[in-house]
Length: 331
Image 1: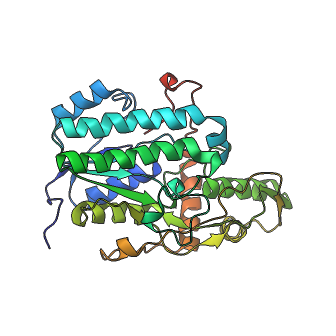
Image 2: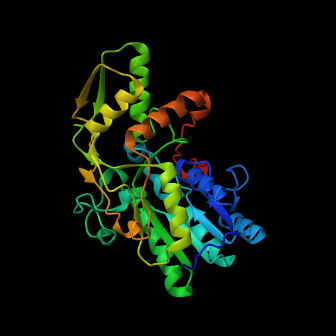
């Protein structure tokens, strides 16, 4: 089978310090590729001119756009402007810069949150734009949808081999455990860890515990993205998930066991649940020969052990600007 990514390809991973980007960079390095990276202080990806100069100077064979301003329900609700505008600027800079620098291969990471709130389950890729979005993350979702349209437009108008991956909920080493702005799984790890440490007999969590989610280990995402870079060249986005889900209550029980919390778990139904269910149809990815290999209980346990070992180094709280120029974290 002819690969779309030669073994000696040099690849720029935008967002290499984030959960997704770091996993993709690790997998590419393990496969023998030269991975090009730049930190926030070296390159502001919202700056189109600086991004284009960088891409023309380094001349990568491929680009992975994993950089984004991201966060959980609370952050999405509190800081809609940077979730919309920062992500639009990053996408315009990197995608437009890649084309102008004649980079013919690019992988854009979208998100499963772009699907309609009440999409039929499991969600197939053609459910995109068939219904209203979840209101709590609409600005972020709209930015990502614009990125998908941008990828398709470069394919249609210029014949670029740009493709889109839509990951489900991710977790793993490199995640953010900030108590206000993290996603659900690292937030649960921290909550149960602190409760066990302090000897509390109850943890009260947001919502009802009934929404269903799937969770993909970041290393499995990295492997899936390498597969897509090498073997996929289509107009449609590709779902990246595990094809199985569980309730948030079941997830909480899994995390509590991994952490060693033995008290009660309560629920606050006055807080939002978010989308009732979000399970991806992964048949398109499976047809490329890919399957995830990390069971959730093991992945949660290993993520918890990583966080304990990293300590303060794992604490990278995200800062959200009231205006995009103030630089929310995106790499």
